[in-house]
Image (cartoon, rainbow, N blue to C red):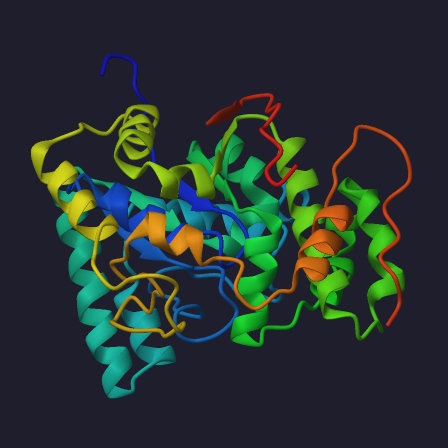
Length: 327
């Protein structure tokens, strides 16, 4: 496609918003080298200096021009597919790590030699999406999921939202002072309120971020082929028979509703072939109707006015005017 983007791609969005799935589907055409969660503070998949030679200190690490000294050189190497063999070997040398080193080092080297582009699948970059677009030249796709399905997924997995990861980053709070409204929830035992607050905070940041494409996971899962074809066009990737065949197979797998979350493979992703429409139908399992209604109330977005009472116990966003999922 004439004039299409030729730089790296970032697929982001909160965890359990389909970033691994979307990233794998974009890589299915063979034009991208898949890089999984370099900003994840846990190892694996994060803390791999061969992939990213920078120290991650927070979940949802905030990167901006004021702290870019360490991040910009490191990510320039990552998106240029320059693998740091020695640094990785010094840091991680279990049998699993060595196998991962060989896989990533080979993929980076061959990808660079073949002129492929890097695809970063990283939910932990969601609050820094604008920096990736403006400073690294990434084509950014930010997935947003229906907030009830998002909250149900986190509950099924027993995950806990740690809002301090956001509030302990002064530059993030400086640039997004609305996050100070999360302080009353820091000691709250109300998991639904905390999960809703994270969803709302991330969505608010994304809606204010120019130069990115905010995309509904739910709409993509409901009709994956035309949805991914649009994303291929947006990222400048050729839509091939191979890509269509692989995406069809991966999105219509039998027996795939929502599955137990498990990491697998050397990339350590949670992606599994699934029937994406069936998964949508089962996405809110685990929440009562009253809980679902409460999540919707807590995640209502408005242009003005006070935040909701949290209690105690395919839209182009180039300025982004993004579709408000779940309303």
